[in-house]
Length: 433
Image (cartoon, rainbow, N blue to C red; front, side):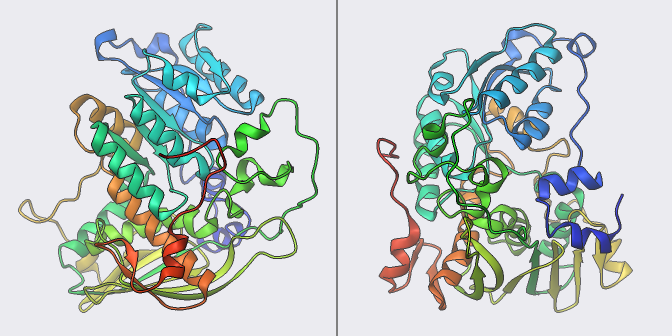
């Protein structure tokens, strides 16, 4: 286990996913062989297709599903054939057979009548499109965060409602005790009236990426990897982990990490189905290489209830400051801290606000909701709202001026230039229409 001081420097070069694996703060669960787990009755079993089998798709999502008796992974899909084959090997080893199917085209998964739900672990620019097509195909969906644009999220919400499917925005934060606890403390007034939220996200990697075109590896379907994004020549720095630092595929560090800590902020602020009304910030973008998302950032969000939220780079942390004290933590999943032992040790009584959680995580919550048809703990509209907070920060830095946002109408106030950036065109033949 590394110290809190050491973790700050590590975060400058590692993602949240690789950071938590390195430190041991969050680990991939140990697989339990099928012969030791018993088998769920077929009528209670949820058949799942996996779309996207990269590091997080297999190391976290797939391994979680394989430990549930009531879920059965039937097919794995990835445009990278090597990653796809590795995922199949993991599934077959767990089930002690060779039954898991493979495909490089997600549409094959969606066309299968025996698939009840899909787990989507693709790069961000595919999240909404595959989710929408899956929902239209009658599948329930668990999908990694975030959306690529604000308007994509609105389409996603409409599709979930129209087809009456279950949709889980896939992050673990609402099942992590420290974030759940601090949100409940704030919502129940333990720090008085909330005034300020301080969010710290990590810095991006220190290299700008090599844009030099390279031959496409034989195992990769490059055109399918690009999908709805603009055409670009292949280079290894575009794909897999590094897509996060390129605008065409993601929203950089603010979207990658902000979707986590901003959700806790919105949860505690009781604005999880709304959002800020004013955003301003300064920052720089990567230059001189392939990467072009935000590099450094200093953001300020203002809410209609008077709460001010700031966001800067450093050791990923969050702090809520109220009229009667503060609560928060330092470092990803760091222990709860407060301005007094009374706040830290207080008990939330039965008749106070209790926020929904699932100690076994987002995958267990999703499977339970597929059965009950209830809304998951991180439903589509709340996921959309926290993605919007991320997008608003990126756009404020991009435009270089203060933005006024109407969270009810979900548009900028008297600002056509900003409104034009709520969406992006998709490369033919891909479309959300």
